Amino acid sequence: MTPSMPRLLLVLFLLAPLGVHAAPAEDQWFTVLLDGRKIGRFHNTREVRDDRVVTTQQLDIELDRAGTRVAMSSTEVSEETPAGEPIAFTNASHLTGNETRIEGRVANGRAQVRIRTAGEWQEREIAWPEGARLPEGLRLAGLAAPLEKGASDRQLSFMSSSLSAIAITSTVGALETVSLATGRARLHRVEQAFEFPGPGVVSTAWVDDERRIRKLSTPMMGVELVMLECDEACANAPNQSSDVFERTLVQAPRTLRREELANGVRYMLKPRDRGAPLTLGDTAEQSVKRKGSQLVVDVRRDARTGFGTPPEAADHAANDWLQSDAPEVVALARKATEGVEGDAARMLALETFVRSYITDKNLGVGYASALEVVRDPRGDCTEHAVLLAALGRSIGIATRVVDGLAYAPGFAGSKNVFVPHAWVQAWTGDRWRSYDAALAGFDAGHIAFSAGDGDPWRFYQALDLLGRIEIRHLEALPADASH
Image (cartoon, rainbow, N blue to C red; front, top):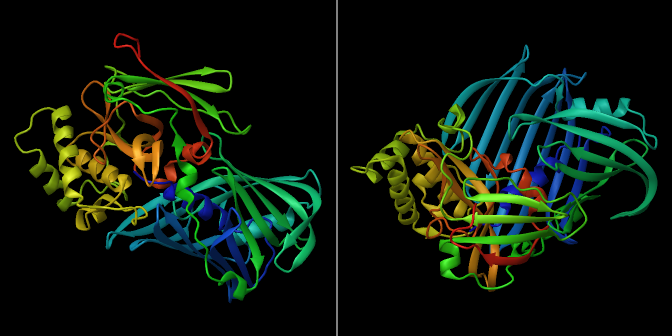
């Protein structure tokens, strides 16, 4: 099982581009706080080099996961014209030994991109999203927008880590007195809404009259994540221990019995706060009904026949996280399924293979791709899931990586809890069926949030759900209950 490292990292990377309403500060340092405890630093620089503006943004954080320290960093370099037109971008992210590097050059509405994962480069060409801006373009657009209460401005920010654009709507609020590392200051409050599918992400920035961001905050898992401007010494001060994982655990009302997990369970879910309503989707094993602010979720181990639309081409294709066309992945899949007939049986064989192949079960890996796991078989549920999904695709089975919660009788000193988890759905001819290589297979102790292609940036919905769900009641489903 895994905590929400990819989701937390997503939030931090979203906060990192300080182009919206940012002033032309040449060198700006921030301390990064989670629930009041220092977990990292952020450094933003802007240089004018002849006919280019170069913005460099460096984020370094450390977190604890059930007693394991995990270090993560991201460096993004953007080159733009003085008018804010994109020229080139580079993003290098490190998660506990795993590195992903993305390089791109923009011209004539297209971007030539190189991506390095698992030590290998891949090249592609993408269409540049119309109207998308990098940090300097966002800065200039922010300077042109009015800084008065009620004013609203919408910009499209290109996120090099995901090679996609995200709309950000900034709305100016009232002047507020804000405590900073250097003292108290009167700053303009600016609400920033990141328009993801689902509930999205909302942060709050406080800017001065020159539109320079001095503080940035977003709610996450019931606590506050803050980036606070300070000097270099403050930003580089030692980090403090902060186990974000414990905030993502969901307490079960009681122990789930083996026969319940093997058959089916009905859950009554309610939000812990008054934020956006809880939203979950149906799967072949999960059906959801709304009851006021609560959700009634029925989960069965056995998938419904013919449920859901058939797979799309993307569910078969290799990508940067599921390198199903890599010779090493193909060879493993063929070896594991030799002599096995039928897609359902082959997925079971792959599930068993992955469970034994990843010999080092630990929480120290941030998020590895399938090829990285093949070469270094260690990690938690995300590594099991991406490898299983890639192996399935390599032999022609459509797969998706699912993000959600899974029941654990005991985990990291806690009893009867649901833990953030990842597993796989595979299309086995007439249905999407779930497989879990990190645990003893799929059962009714799994609650699905969303499904994607293995890219951690696709798990938007979990950002809102983690830390907000409470299981108010659960009961066994009768054997003949409709699903």
